[in-house]
Image 1 (cartoon, rainbow, N blue to C red):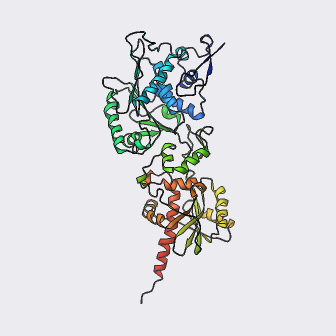
Image 2: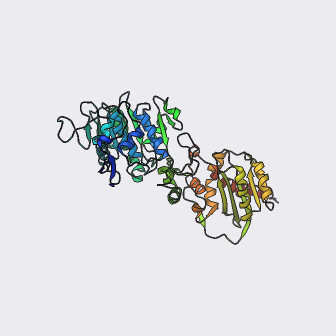
Image 3: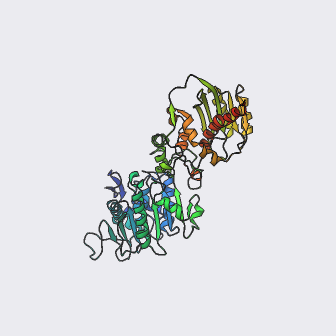
Length: 500
């Protein structure tokens, strides 16, 4: 027999779902607790878990069972982070240990209370009672003497319960065994406010940390907004280990943090927990590559923070959005050339930029190849680039197999003079010292953010703090172009000057 009922979560569609009658429930016997994924699908049968959700839930289960004490999870918006960490997880933890005192904190008391009410609805459900019959909460006025409000609920006949508090709220007199901090900043405006960030940090150190004891656990889960937000500050002040393999859950550092970051568009190398190939979306059916690429074009800096988990302060950018664009090439073009830097490693990009120089020395980018494909694929791409852009001279850095690459490209573009050279200059010093010249002289075709989105994103989000950048390939090539066209040619002209 099947009974029709409404969803028990206010956070999801009110569409009706079908669950079996109590006598027909086919949940596992309560001898061994269910896995977190089994529990989630049991109480929320409407969930459609993707591969990354199952990874996420497995990590959350390690936290729930006390195998991990301090965990940071960063995830793009609308990917289910709060459903797992702030709705399902507290109910699961109270089932495993009814004496546990759990606190949920968010940017406002009303949002934290909303999470609390969702958890209570799970605790009230028949499905939950099958899994964890010992964890019960007050129904109406019975039994008397127990608390049940939208801010606090107690487990009957046990010491455990659930508290909710807004950022800067008080927890005076309350012991907390587990803190779950979800979205401590309402939006970018709050996260970009030094005052709000300072108040958030003070609240964290004076309220959250003071309520903890030796065995307390912390879970911080939210979308990144700013590199000096709570997570950014913890990354700077405390040991944090990036979570890439399951073996890390077996022996986590006692005092440090584990950090799991899900990028909306895979940019980092594949790992055991996230084996996607570069460029693949985290949740293609909901937030696909095309949609994410469009969002990145609108604001690369914000996209890197919110969707990739790599925030950057705009004031700390080397180039930012200050590049000049052009609609048409000038009539007086004196030279067409190309500069190519082959990839250092499998994770780096080959960057090849063709450009034209006018009589005033301004540099107009005309075409580009920016790819992480292997050399056997990029060689014909660069050869074709040189031919279609009318390049007469091409410079290729020979540091990383560039000499063999240059010979292969020369065979494909016989009308182009291909030269290779060894770049011996310090990359950091070269990029930083030539940044102003790059912005002053280099022009990009209008709409280049659509033609070369990765190239555009990596240049406009490149940071002044050299070691904070993951990729230097694009900045290295535009620096090489201005060095060749301005510095080197100026030196050659000076050598030819004769004084009477």
